[in-house]
Length: 137
Image 1: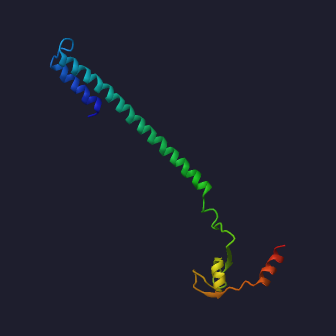
Image 2: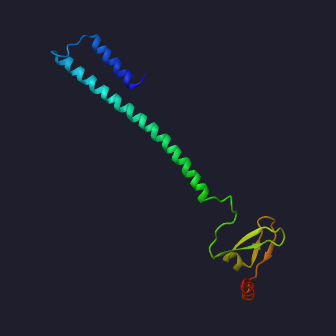
Image 3: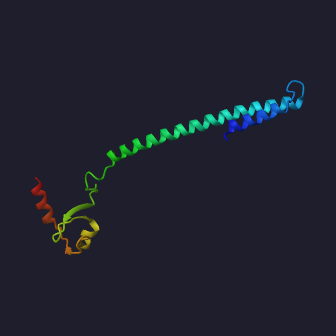
C-alpha cells in the first residue's frame, strides 16, 4: 500500500465518522491534518519518481562514461606501456620476451627473465650507448 493509498484510507475513515468539520474544533483539526498528509504523500511520490528517473539517467551516463574510458584508457590496443626515461626495453636472448629494465637492474649488472628464468649480465658501457646513438642517426 502506497502512502497516498494510506492517506485515502485515513480520509475515508474520517468521513465515515461523520465529523463536523465546520463547527467542531476536533473535526477541523483532523480535516486539516488529512489535507496536509495528502500533500505530503503527493510530494513523496513525486520525489520517488524523480529519484527513479535520475537513477536511470545516471545508469545511462555511467555506461557512456565507461565507453569513453575504454577509448581514452584502452590498454588492449597496445600492450606497450608508457615508461619514463628511467626504463628501457631489451629482448631476452633465450626466449625472446621483451623485458623492461630500470636503472637499478642495470646497476646490479644482472637481469633475470621472468618468463624463462634465464639470468644474464647487463653491461651498457658508454661505447655501446654511442654506437646506438650513431645507428639511430
